[in-house]
Image 1 (tube, protein in one colour):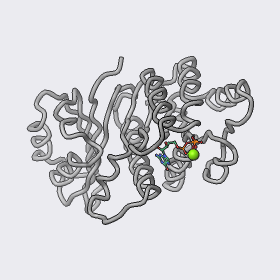
Image 2 (cartoon, rainbow, N blue to C red):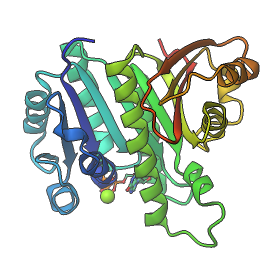
Image 3 (cartoon, rainbow, N blue to C red):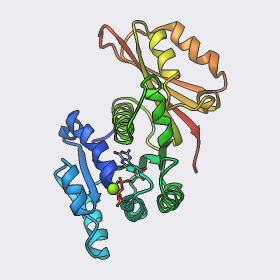
Length: 275
Ligand SMILES: Nc1nc2c(ncn2[C@@H]2O[C@H](COP(=O)(O)OP(=O)(O)OP(=O)(O)O)[C@@H](O)[C@H]2O)c(=O)[nH]1
Ligand SMILES: [Mg+2]
């Protein structure tokens, strides 16, 4: 892929916490990746470690202008957000329309509100989901999914739960970036899901990735296309395993030979083409 200016935008404090993890992982250091947050200044400034923060509590035309100035050289726009929040509700339709004018595909990593959150947040989320039908690619997860990562812990607090969400989004965004930049994953893949796993062999890593809790039970079985990346070990057994679970899916394999001790398997499954 050509030199690409990728804008990753964290919306609200949730989105900001998620992109903070990307920054900590060194993702923003790449010349072609900018990380931005959007939210109310009294909140976002307490949370965000990004250098570029857009404040929503200013008059609305200025916000539109600020977002469009920030995105002007974007080739791909990645939105990261909890969909129940005020930042997501205000910014998602604007970002999508600006990106469309630039001909830049939009990709969303987002979570739906927790079952116990209030009606307003659920309404916001519904509105945002509707706006995201215009996005080119979306990875959308209910917050409850993240409980599965802490199944064996006796207790889990809500911030801890969201911290898991942010961790998983950070990993998913990194996988997506690697696959589109270094390999040939198309940016526009509609509704999609991702997962990853590690193992001593490629087969073991793949098995763990397939059972990663972000996947719905039948998501890999239903997928039209499945993109798999292994960090090492082009294992025939691993290929046959995936073929076995979904003979109908078109499979794309990428094997790096990092020769690290553990094999990491990353999977992106196209579950439904949105357009
Ligand atoms: N991924 C993620 N989602 C979060 C986090 N904290 C809260 N959420 C979810 O995201 C939604 C929006 O919350 P915030 O990100 O705080 O929203 P905001 O835009 O800052 O604005 P407010 O609506 O004023 O809180 C909530 O309804 C939660 O479901 C987080 O740390 N990470
Ligand atoms: Mg908030």
